[in-house]
Length: 256
Image (cartoon, rainbow, N blue to C red; front, side):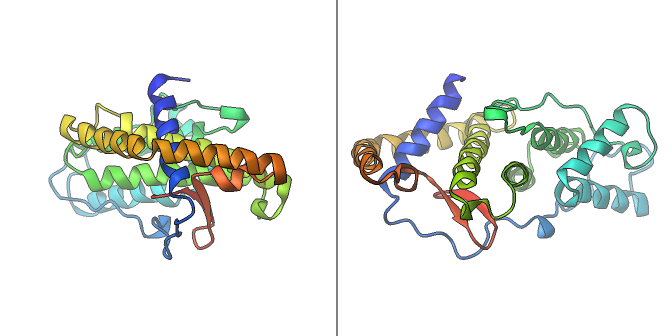
């Protein structure tokens, strides 16, 4: 496990454990794929033939469809076809190359997050090629949240529907959600190159401050939870910084 990855996970667990008792899940889902749209600005560096008119609008429509509304499995098929010159959506001039999961493991505990990482790379690299990567913080945040949603969908696929209602599958689902949320937060906090130095320092400073402020409380709460585990096998429910959101149908991190 990489050092930044471990530090991120430790800070999240310590911070969340201390405020677990007073935590309330937000009433509304914090991200909705069907409503997510990256709006064209009109001044992008477009591929030849897509500078204006119907082709310009069609390009952005297809980009949003591939990024937010196409199932991850179908997206992977399109991506593979594009790399082999097959006709279809893979012909569109997007950036299909990917290095996989750069800020976390591809397959933690056999949970295969690579399809989610490939789509995240697709969004980032295409946005960079269009010349909007550095300035469009809102678009990057949507791509990042979509990355977490894709990983959450993978968790549901692995464990089956309604996994939180079955004790054994619930445990596996939550472990998968832990990896997904930690992957997401590691990428947000330590991505580095795509963010300004000021923003990196701000986020890292806030996380560090919150971590140290709640460290003592977190440690005490952890030991209390361990005691409860010994007595009633309820360790996860007392320690976890991740909670099931009934409206989203996803397990999300406290303070999402």
